[in-house]
Length: 564
Image: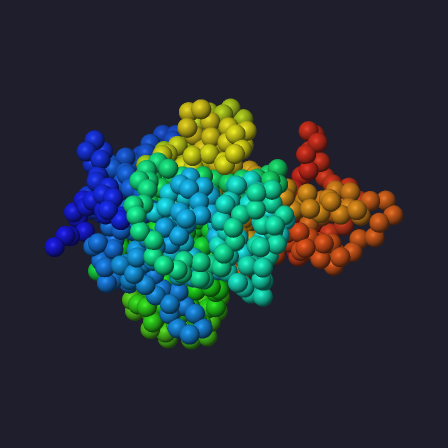
């Protein structure tokens, strides 16, 4: 009988055998050593990468089949539905994904792109693994996007097939996908996510998929307002997930990872589904967040690790009787997406009897840093923790472009084989973010202390994080300025106790135009995802400007803050 410390065995897919490369042996599945940064004493804000644990050179499909071989009857995925928990074992998941991969390859060829548009479901996870086995690239689509946004992402990524849910929160995704597809130059095939994999099983060999091949195009947004697709390889996604799990494992014989983050986020497709897969754990979820239902799901499934954003933390703590629920299996809660106060961290740990850890990452470099169990409440709440393995991190002074001093804010740069390959079909944007020496310029303002612990100070790119969703002001401003009554718009984030930040807009109206915030909000809502739409508005006659002609956004934020 094989133990978890044995190296991965060859996997068989329809007669094809993928053996480990002799020149690049797989690392044994052992726990990582104590973090070097626990003993390190830096003299400047540059932390070398911890390259002790060797990278796994696996494709996502190989990881799935390895788990089916090792843990055939163990729970792999479970998603709450109105009729109960829809679940699959690792063997059942592998069988469905294998058949679905053949169904895909009857429609596309390896290297093509496939869009998935729907709420969290077992079918979504099957589609993710089917794409991996077929060697096609997964393109997750946010269920909140407006038609124009979906059209842009499908067109630019050249999606050949779209798998869409029939309906989500009253939004007819499947019907919308069909109408959108008809208007594209090369109309993709559109199928229902819930039943597209039905049909007679198809045989034959599945393709060999390199660990270095693209696995995922994760769309984000840039300060220019044009969404950018971060291309992540199988190697990056698997090792990101593996190192992320090492910092949140509870030591249970069978970990159960529950997260209600949506699968269109890298925080769920990679830092949820694949985090669980890295140790053969179960991934548990639901199509929407409800605090009481989430606690019931934890109790029902014996969840050991819970993934949340601060919005969920606030709602869970506010739930009457939360401290009386049977959460005895729960050991670790992983938070991310926005900051929380030390008092909230202490309250959460005390109320639920768990360890709270915090993770940081971007679509371009998921789960790049995190705190760990045993850290102080201050470190967990006020810092991003330490970089994960195989990530070299440097804080760059904004003026000198040299390495910043300890404690000095500057731009966070990350160099790692786990960063994105590129922005899909955007060479200029790629060159502006990934430099010739391999450094990813994150656009985030951070500092580093002598332990290698990173503190977040703000966003050079001015991204607003609303309840875990990234909102880029330039994108919203472009929409508002397309309104015939608006001359100029500036969008800022303002503090919110529940969401972390909310979106606010200052607008300068055209001469003779009337300021009507309700009409502007409706206009924006027809063109943007709901989380991007400003909910607080101010009309200004002019904007405060710097000497170089840039808007002083800090002064604008103060317009929305209560006077002291």
